[in-house]
Image 1 (cartoon, helix red, strand yellow):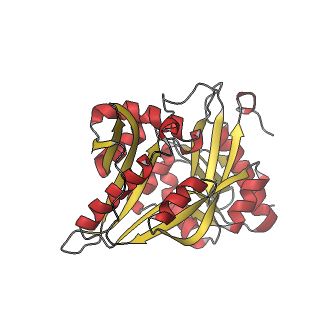
Image 2 (cartoon, helix red, strand yellow):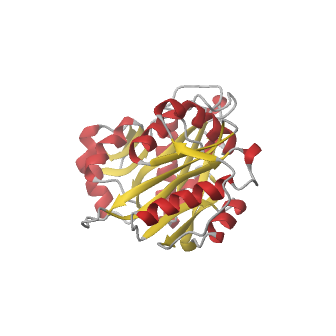
Image 3 (cartoon, helix red, strand yellow):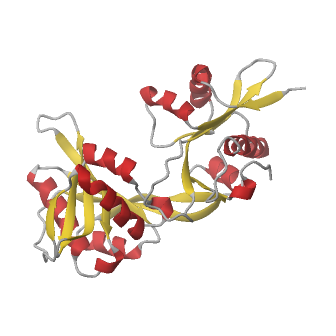
Length: 308
């Protein structure tokens, strides 16, 4: 009989995790984690499936640390993204093992009245089936766009634009919470990362902050330094929409990239966000690749420490 057990992952499991990741076709790393980032996986909620005879890992699931934004309403759940998963088995066994690993990870989180929103972005068939068997449902998909470098036609200027300062970030987090659903929200901690890595511009109307954009420059190793850029964020307060603020922010980011002779700008948005898609396509962004499905599973307080 092949006996296995599940326990929380430990840093010393990393070599076995790397072996499993390299050797299994049922392996998932969100955002292509590098070797230097793999130890970070063990700082969240993790679970490993261990063969009791060989002591080798047969399965692994890692969810990120929980970061709750103070800008979210009290009723909003805390987000918990899937960072990595790998299963040696196939078919029904893989789905069953993933579910057992997921149950183990979610029991590691402390009770809270808002509950948790576990989520994952994936195209992989085995993972989609495993998520669905574990109670996840597809709620949306992420669509990708790309724009080749070219001049930008003049647009209306309804707002005054200025660079963001660290002191602006709490206000931007509140604006972000009003603009996006909790699943897509960025709090102060995430905005601090953006402020270090991106060019953030704020749009103001009559002294009030009504929107912001974040553009990340990406090095290509060439003498000029940057070959592409990613529009990481474009947010306009619901009360300021249809005035051209989003178009102004987007055009300003594109002009900046064009001045740096950046060859392409890319971004992503929700498949359900038709107004944003219309805006991007009106400024010559073109769809690329296939949409990536987004799966969610909201675990409420009464379920937090109970197997289902």
